[in-house]
Image (tube, rainbow over all chains, first blue to last red; front, side):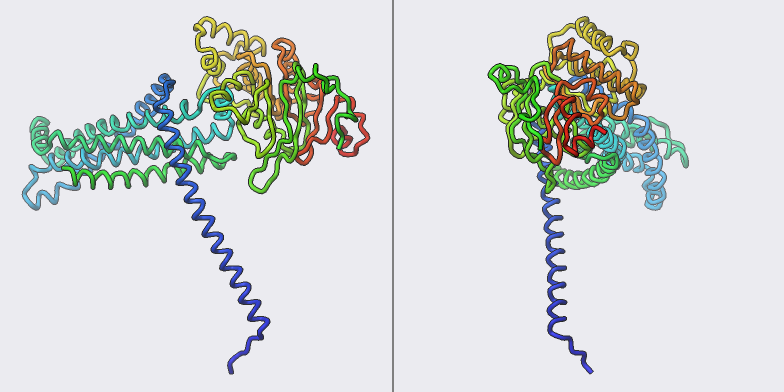
Length: 279
Length: 261
């Protein structure tokens, strides 16, 4: 027998459902507003940074210090990663090329992969982790301990001193680190070739560079500048806009790494598309 | 609520002479964060070479008040005049010029972690007095450190300093630029009674030596007793009482009495 629901109960049920749905709608609207607000804040932050880059008072000493912090202190990490990538890529590619009888192509193939894609992307991802999180945590802790406020009341523009110097240093240093990683990857590849064979460095060098033209370097270096800018901007934005508690420092560092890594991949995809259209 | 007419103070005479001595004047200040109203109606005056202590429970909006004065926060409504200038109508450059005349000691001292004590002190100095030679800068740094009794900390990092030492260095970094107004945000919070006493004495010494006018935010009564020329009490975002410490201590109001127990 079909159960009959009294009209009053049905009305209550409908009201509750309607309230639940409207609460969900409000929640979704707030989420959408939060997302749009974040986009607006990021755009405003980038705008302010660009404006301060072209201001007459440039904090050159702090910029040099940041170049040292970002560049010099990442050398070991980038060197090890680059060399290992060279070795691994060579060892992994060798069996396939052996099957096709094209082992002589190995140096050229690995070098092109390293220069065009693996070197810039892996270096940028490593730096997004090291530099992005460092910036997020440092600026976040400065925010929490009121050091940014102290700078502001000392009549110093914290955007100019903290953000511009870090973003420019990252933009300049990441391409240099990429070139360094590529070089180490090249040597790593030579080592990889020599694990299962015997090739002199001169022959390896000749084989590698017979497949590369100068134009191969340009898109890789250009996109590395963008990777650097993205890592610097995201790290600074997340740190500079950290909340007030100590928990927000960890959150700033973490979200800086996640967003910077994601944006590096997105920028890479755009750069590859543009390069493909132009070259 | 207790007002000026009930608690007469030596500074709040309301005469033309008193007007000339005003360095800060705040009228009907309101500040909310989202739905939470922190300051609902605050008006105050700070006179030249006066130490005004602002007392109130935690969360009563004391720190927000002085952050509004220096332009770190902007109020929803109200008026803030500092050294004859309306803070809310200044452009960023004018605000920076005004900030050069105001010293702000933060609750946690806010020393720059990546710099030594010397670099911390040089930081505002080199940006405010751009034409100083290195010798003059060094002399000023040494003088400021001697004034707070910490010359031996010159090359130390902030992480090597105790809480009291950090407060002193924070104070040295503030007074090194010869400010006309000092804003202290809970200068003795988290310190032991002896160090707290020393910092309070130091606030008085700074006032005598540099002829500063100060607003001292605190809920530490011993600090208020040492430093206050006048006391303002905040309750629920409003000025609840204004007078000398003695007047307030002898008040018959239950809430004020509970504060001084």
